[in-house]
Amino acid sequence: MLEAIAQARGRQRFDLWAYVIMPEHVHLLIHPTEQEYRISRILSSLKQPVSKRAILYVGRNEPGFLGQMTDTQPNGKTWLRFWQRGGGYDRNLWSPRYVWETIEYIHSNPVRRGLCDSETDWPWSSAGVFLGVSDGPVRLDLGSLPDDPPGC
Image (cartoon, rainbow, N blue to C red; front, side, top):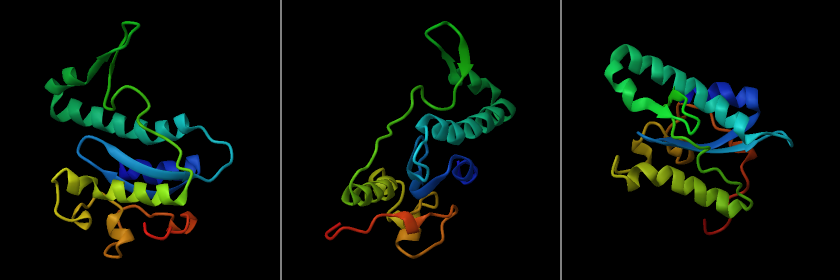
């Protein structure tokens, strides 16, 4: 996923503000840098490389599990699916306060789930960058973030 983020951000022209990669889902906070963009293209450029690698990996290392990844479409066609059907839970954030609350939510996800004790303990997160304890595995575009609102 980290490689897909790094590759997609240049092709799809978005800034990466925050992320956490969980065992069964991903949270990304991105900011498209072009006036005209298609979220479906951004999501495809993130999801497709991960899906292809995951399916190849499972096929080589645990082929019996491929049946669990088979998805039958409403038209009867079957596909191997890594990601859940649908576009995910994407939305626009219009206020700086909501941006910063969303970053807090993203970073606290592994702690809420009991996967670690501190946000900075989870290595697949941008929390360490925000708290100044690591550079993180993927570069963030903090210069384009809105100002941190008081009390947030």
